[in-house]
Amino acid sequence: MPTAFDQTLAAIDALHAEDPRSTTLADGTSMPKELAYAQRMSGWLDNVHEAPDDVLRLAVRAQHLQRWLVPREDYPEGRVGYLTWRRDQGKRAGETTAQLMRDAGYSEEDANRAATIIGKKGLGRDPDVQALEDCACLVFLENYFADFSRKIEHDHLVRIVQMTWRKMSPRAHELALTLPMSDASLALVKEALGAE
Image 1 (tube, rainbow, N blue to C red):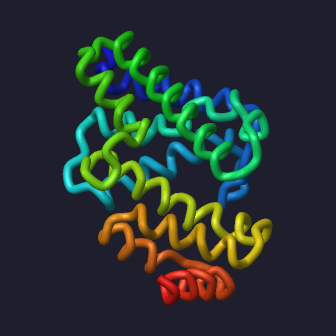
Image 2 (image 1 turned 30 degrees about the vertical axis):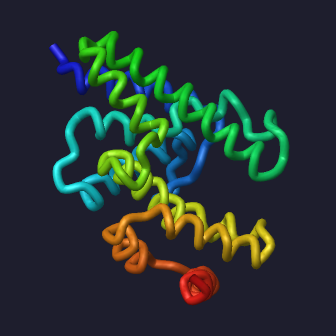
């Protein structure tokens, strides 16, 4: 019999695998975008948290659960629209993950805890929420920042880097500065941090 953790993780990954969008990995293989993101999130967790428990591992894995179902374009443009979309996505992903956990036999307390972490309630105060945020920031910087930076106006991008940096722990800052980056990306990060 699979454990409750294994059962929930498999259910989360099965939903990730339904993402109709795909991405090409470094080795040239294709994978559903959300599944690749989730695996990258899990890959960073042990680097930012000394002893992640199973609830945190599931929350980190499920942070973007079924995000493609509610596109950003369904919300108004601008910061308020973006923050509303992100909040709604976190709430939905948290509720879905909590239900998957209950179905696998987790307690109500553990299921609710995962939903709280995914919803990023307590960022800056809760070490588990901080770990999830650190993973998300590192995944962004490592895998998506270079492409993202080509689409955004320079000064706006500097502000985004500064906001991202403020959300990260000192440990995540150390890790971020070791990431391989293009000269252009590195220059942008240094500019943003120099202006802090």
